[in-house]
Image (cartoon, rainbow, N blue to C red; front, side, top):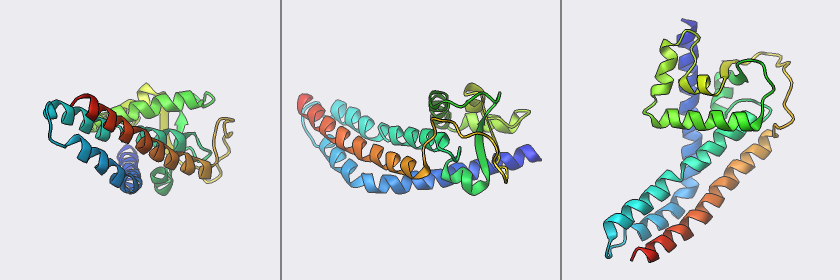
Length: 190
């Protein structure tokens, strides 16, 4: 029963994080629509060009999502806003010092798990310890937050406000980089 409760909390936390990411994407959408309109413009080779540019525009939204999960897990909270709301946090499975590189790997595994239609999360329902596939790959566990979190804050952790600013900056940088790339590809493939 405890495993199912943790699974439900993790699922709700992911839902909250998706709402936060969707809200951040709402800021980015007008810029992406410009790129999409460029990609969808008719012309010779339009099908190939349209598919490549739409993939670039939509697939590139994974970069800010990766940055979001990576930095929030690396900050002193050790949790995304969704995990904080559900009262859970990320910890290393074997009590090793947490590094930003290990957290980045785990965040990448989590995105791949999400892209696999969430099958890695379903794994947690059948795992003896309630671990998702990316928890196994990233040597991490999600546990209830303790009232007095006495574990050491790693030197690589960021302040939560800096984390939020960096995530927002990654959205802006993504938009500034992708739109010109879409223009250049559109002109080259004409």
